[in-house]
Amino acid sequence: MADVKMSSLPPASAIAGGELVPIVQGGQTVRWTVPADPIIEQSSDDIAFTGGAIDGVTLGGTAKTIGGVYATQVSVGQAALAAAGVVPLIPAVSGHQYRIRDLFVSGAVTNFSGGGGDRNIAITDGTSTWSVLPAASLASLAPARWGDTLVPWPAGANLAQASVASQAVRAVYSGGSADYTAGALVIVVVFERIA
Image: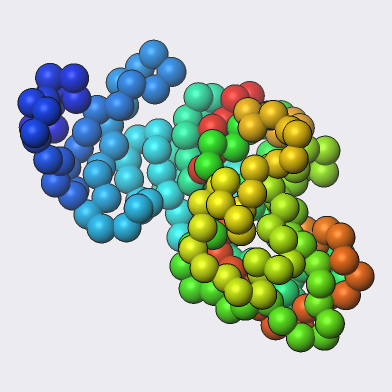
């Protein structure tokens, strides 16, 4: 079934995990391996996932191409954010520009607490902000997707806003006055390279 177009599949067909599926992306058909269980896992061709930070040049051994859609999963802990710390979610690469397609809080989490901490976590490139995770939600974490209470849409911003060229998309503290002494979450960013 891997060599059959999705539009040719009968309506009742189920796609099994591990099966190659054609996807039209940027006018070209690419192949994608259907995850066996997780929502996002390592796959082939232009759609890929990594279990940690990406190097900004390659992802899963595939060169990042313009129009390619990727996902990265990064652990963000209170210690890395303390004292104006920055956690890159999509590292800066000279000339590269991205469009965020989806955001998730996933995986192992530890509620943010202690030290009178009251900060939010912003997902930003320093110019545009795609979401601000509110302090109240950081105190009682649960898996969430962009648009949920924990990962809200940006206030009054264009959801399709492109990142600034050559700038990292990153997690930083915003608002509040005191850092936390405990807490960690995993942020998954699905993004498209546009330049």
